[in-house]
Image (cartoon, rainbow, N blue to C red; front, top):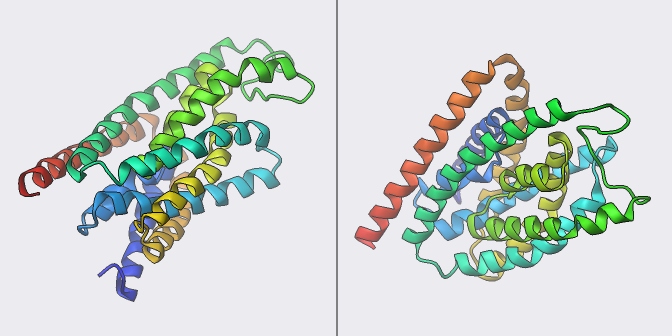
Length: 278
């Protein structure tokens, strides 16, 4: 069904829906696209591989916009990507070897962890606003500059750790990794939330390519369905980001928790069913 024109149109609509929720809830589309693909009986390893096509397209779209606006700290993005591209290969390699039931259960756990990470990101954002001393001394959009080499060298270890972790998650679960990278960048690199989002998005471009290459080698990628999902996701993310300011924060947070808990329950039940009938 997914390899027919009607299936492609359906995937574009699903991508639009997941992209809207992604822009609305502030999470990566991969967390939503992977469960959506499994509804059509796509094996989880193929769903994660195909999701990376959409992750790549959306991260390229966002990064080009940030680069043109002069808002992308490409040096830190490159450092994060440098470490992430290697572990993305590892994650994709593992995903091809872990049984579907175990992978589904792990994905369910990732969705629950995401709830905590988003809560952590919100707490860090509030703390950064409270700790802001002055616009010229401490900015919420802290950047690493070429004339401050000490700052870059002392941050290399946490950058390496964040990049390595994001790469594994991207290759294994078909997600961008931004949901993990952003709060960790805020926590360990003292980046402002907007800067962290842009930096992680730039890194995800290269990390997604790396994971895709390994999955393509394993023949797991459904290219046309992935492109349809990705294009729909790009369009939907614009819709969601425009709806976001119109909704109260409490409503968005409640929607976020309920939706991810529901997806986690679905993936857990899928794991049990796969285990039972596999």
